[in-house]
Each structure stands twice: as C-alpha cells, then as structure tokens.
Length: 278
Image 1 (cartoon, rainbow, N blue to C red):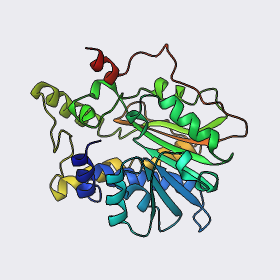
Image 2: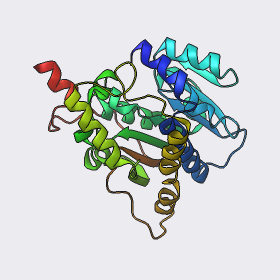
Image 3: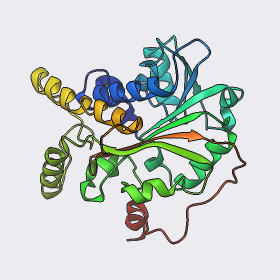
C-alpha cells in the first residue's frame, strides 16, 4: 500500500460501510472461539492503521504489527491504548507469538508474493490451540485498478484459498465466501470501472464514503451475513456462501510440527506476476 492509501484508511475506516460491517462480523466470530478476558491475547498481523484490532480492545488484550512505519504511526495516534509494533511477524512479535490465543490477518495474504510461506511461518511459531482468522479478496473477475493500486498479487477462489493450509496440522472451523449479498452490485460496479479504465473512489481505489443513508443500508446488508456464518461455524443447518466479494476462514492450530513451505510451482501465475512479465 502507498502512503496515500494508508491515510485514506485512517480517514474513512471508522465510518465506511465495508470496514464497519467487516469488523462486526469478525468481532462475532472471534467471540465464538475466544472468551473475552485480560489474558486473552489477540494479535492483528498486517494491522494497517489499527481500526480492526482496536475494535476488539474493550474485550481482549490486543496488539497489532505491520511492516509500514507510517501505518503504525497513524495507528498509535488514533488508538493510544493498543500496542502497535513495527516489524514482521512472527520474528518481531517476541513473547506475543506464544501468548496470543488468536491471530487475525485481514486482507493481508494477497499483499505477499508467497502466501504459503507467510502462513506456514506463523502457524509454525504459534501455540497449539490458538486460532487464526483470515480474510482475503475473492473472485478474479472482480480484478480492477483497485487491486493494482493496493499492490495485490491475486484475488482468491475457494480452492486456492484452502490450499494454503491443506496438509498442515490445522482444523478449519469455518471457510466461506462473504460479502455475498452485495456481490451482484459490486460485480456490476467493477465491470463499469474496467470499461472506464479507472477506479470509482479516491487514490486509485473504490473507497469513497457514500451518503449516510446509503452507507447505513450497505453496512446493514453486509453485517447481516454474520448470522449465517455463525450457523455454519456451529454446524447448524446452513450452507457456506458459494460466492462473494471476499473469503473468510477460521482455523485452529493443532499439535504437530510445521515446516515452512513455499508456494507450489504448479499454481497459475498471480495477476501481479503476469503484469510484471509483460
């Protein structure tokens, strides 16, 4: 991400429907697997400007880490009661790596070339029994300037997403598309943006704060998916969403050693890799 995009996040992520609804869903999922308490440590890897982990700080002992000093400085200014570290996980987390009961990686894996290495490194260093909550953008057909501006390597389908942890000592508790109700609208907007050759919002992204009534409506529609996701998590009579703008997974680290592994060579090239080869 570029400096202008970190500033954009800091400006709107407390109000914009997508950020707010996603935090509400994530908060519900976290609460289902980790009882709140002063000893319940949650670490946000790739915390950006801090709003995601700060939303959990009234119930958990929270910390965020990011490689961007600008993002962390914005996070510290906005949320002084939350610990924020500049560095790379797991090596720069120190004792927090073993203390954490839950890790969040919210739209992080698409920003790294080798997502297999990143997740396996974190899982290898984590305590058995800890949880990982992952979100990533979904659907290659939704790829636009928005993804390029954010430096995404890829958007995921379900098989590509699940393959990152397949054959590791991990129990997937929930894997589903989400932001599914608004998928047709987002797909239409993205198609229009591709034809126009530019993003719909600020600094090369699709983020623009809509009017208050529209913002509230979109937030309510997206956040309303939490009930179905909780039903899937608990094995109640509900199916995971079959398509959506994003994917979400809730994993539990099982006992067993984990070797760091690299991205398989049989995978198709990422979008960013293809562009660099042109």
